Image 1 (cartoon, rainbow over the protein chains, first blue to last red):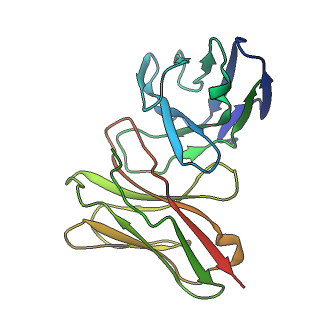
Image 2 (image 1 turned 90 degrees about the vertical axis):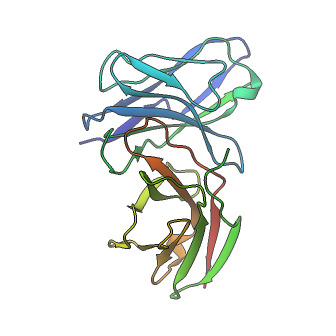
Length: 113
Length: 110
């Protein structure tokens, strides 16, 4: 039981490059979400999903795309990276509709130069 | 808009109880109160949650006021490893999003 796995752990991109941050969970959780955390700040919700084929925007969705084709995976795509997207990205998952805890990955530290 | 208000920082002596307050004056009847903490830059870790009754687990206790407008997380015997940012969140379990505020930075001192 691996929990929530994020890859890569570190990434450096040049402005304008694209990339996908991977998130996978093996707990059969319906709910998955992506957050970004800038230095000294709390987590801000980017996008979330309550099941395969269902996604919705959070607080700061601009510049990011998501899809949810399977229950296990919830990739986050940066189509054209900008320095303002330099941050630490966390993925989380939980059951939906039940008052249970959310599990977080260990984060992806992204630097856009 | 932030649903919760927490003090930005608190100190606690090692071995003493740490009492972290959270104000959620606009909480609705179907919203739970959750607490998470984040140690250094690790992923947040779940601590405890409750609806209206006080709750206790191996990590902490959660005290929710009768009107549910505020709560207190209690770490009964704080250790240096409890130094972290603590987040109080209110959430409806059947709604998708879970949003964090700025949290309280707890520093446990020897």
